[in-house]
Length: 394
Ligand SMILES: *Cc1c(COP(=O)(O)O)cnc(C)c1O
Image (cartoon, rainbow, N blue to C red; front, side, top):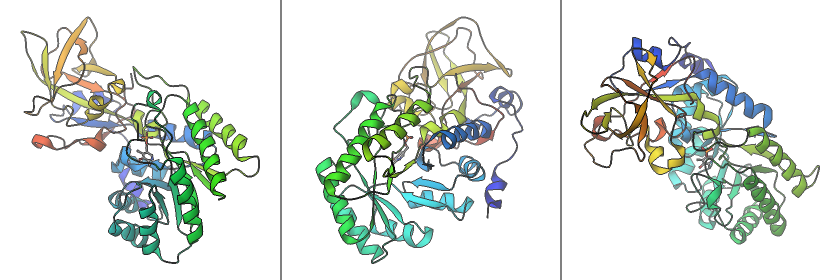
């Protein structure tokens, strides 16, 4: 079964991005991937989190990442689409899925259920409960996890998810009752927002989960605390993950009572994969009058998230002849390769004064939402994944 995953994970040939730049001299932007970094992070989650750890495939669906996690023993996957199920199933035929996109078409529900054995679905609307019920019929093994949302908590994360998904408390109560009445397995889930820096945001959601289940008069066997676990960026330095884990365990016991706690699950994306990839770009042009440079990748490629959330600015460094370039720097305005004038980084970067074309710029901490959101606008964006021993993270 696992041979498929085994075939994908190869020993890295290059030590790091400077070695890739020197030997391969890639013309197109590439992602460098460190399986060691990913395994170390998975280990942190599986040792520390007080429940089951799954992986939010959407944050990085590259087969190198999926295969590395599968080979390291991860068996539960949070998927947002049937396409993601197919990508995981190919590498791990026995994979367990929870389909945590609250909005699914009938065809998607049917394919998830029939082709991939998916029995776990998130819901945040009455219509979605009815839709799933109509498709799965009297299969009472199907779990529906009510995705609830608390009033907007703007300051605590880089990406607030509450504007799109999640039932407010009074609806969540009704949904739980409806699921129970229909005979399905009721569960609960939330997502506190990506890059949640404040562990108390999980505590507030666990308290609310208890309040909602109690008001509904429904016992929940499982509580999925979502993703949102932070990575470390130059402008966003969170507390250690162990602080999050111990507060989550404590809060669950405090609110649900010792011995009657739901089983916990988490589904990190960013917190698990951000450290495992860097993006190696090349300078195409340095304008000698002024401070403009043009890279072979940009906001339509691996750097889209920098545009959406400036606090997630990745760390970066310049590589020339296989060596990191030091010395005095100045602020440069950095354009991407497309012909769209919007294709410029949202902040100037401090790069060496003597920058030259064909120097490389490595951006670190781009394992999450880097390769996942890259487009092929103007024909750019093929992004090969190069296994390396280690990657730069600032
Ligand atoms: C995006 C998403 C995740 C992963 O979020 P991160 O902030 O990357 O950890 C987990 N669960 C669901 C339902 C999501 O939509």
